Length: 281
Image (tube, rainbow, N blue to C red; front, side):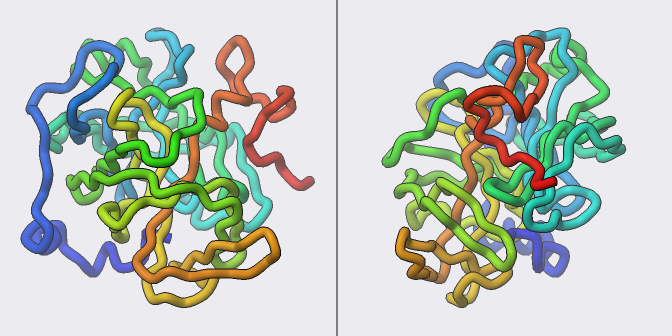
């Protein structure tokens, strides 16, 4: 998973090696629609990962805002296989960025709404501010979590708040079962070679270039060509055969959140058709 080595690399060194991609200086003031290019607007830099300011398609401006990152970016450390967290107190903070990657404000969470590293790899936080407050004070507009399964071949962008860099590529396809160490993920997104994401990009949103909506969350890649070990995920065929592709990067789908919402926009894992992982006990 994309955590290891980020502290050994400096942001200046990475910028020198790869170049930092930035977009227009102004943050959007209205819900994101179709975009010509993804910027760093609405991304949130964490101490060890990337994250983003997000909303459901049905979210209201008066709702508490939400922050999305990986399950393995949870402040309590990696979650065990089968572990699911819901409605846990949190004091996580991050730096909200504008389109060019400059700091707008510190945002703070007070609750983990949902977190797991099983089936998918996500942590969704509730922030202390509403969407309306963040918009009026900072011009920040949350990225919308798409309610639809992404399409193979779709153009995507992966903006990393940690590195202030944006990767662009296409969805190469989907992996029914992706395994890394003790964790297994379902229907993972496989990128083409242009999205060779690195450590520190964990938690970055995967943004559909046509709609501007989030269709997934970046979470891992195979560093060394090893088979199914930490930082070396493997693809598992239906017959159990495993394949490892050094340098291949992956993400997890996020429309699952929209399958588990009540009319009051709360996550209920008992909702019919809910795809999010349920606790094992």
